[in-house]
Amino acid sequence: MGAILGGLAIPYLLRRLPRERLFLLALFLFGLFEASIGAFPLFAWVLLAFFISGFLNMAFIVPARSILQLNTPQEMRGRIFAAFSAVMNAAVLLGTLWGGALEGWMGAPRVFLLAGAMVSLAAGYTLLTGGIPAPQETRQTQEA
Image 1 (tube, rainbow, N blue to C red):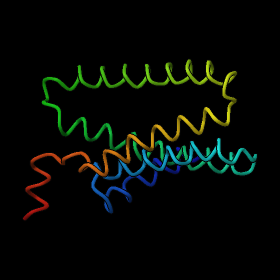
Image 2 (image 1 turned 120 degrees about the horizontal axis):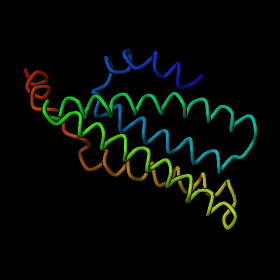
Image 3 (image 1 turned 90 degrees about the horizontal axis):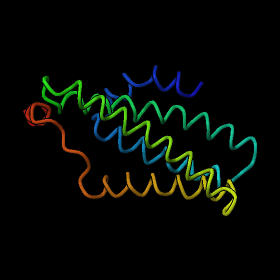
């Protein structure tokens, strides 16, 4: 349900924030909510956190694809999007593999806490070091 609402909210959010910032902020918050599932493993909170995570997932996936499309030369888009899909699918598989492997040793709450913290740290570091530069055309339009 959160992903459906996130998909509907994307056009509104993109009018408020540049896609590069929306991508990083949504990814950062997604990690925080994932970590919160491990920090507060209460059924009601987990349901709410999964709902919000679905919303935030759409809020970073849609801008990510838009950023790729705007920054990729036309003749390379097919290959770049195929590579993007392969990397995203591999990340899901590796996350599932490592999450399952670590669950027996750490317990599910700590796995969620660790995974969410790593996502938020990566996005937060990128935000603090300048973020993702906007395409040249977008920067010129914003400066005018």
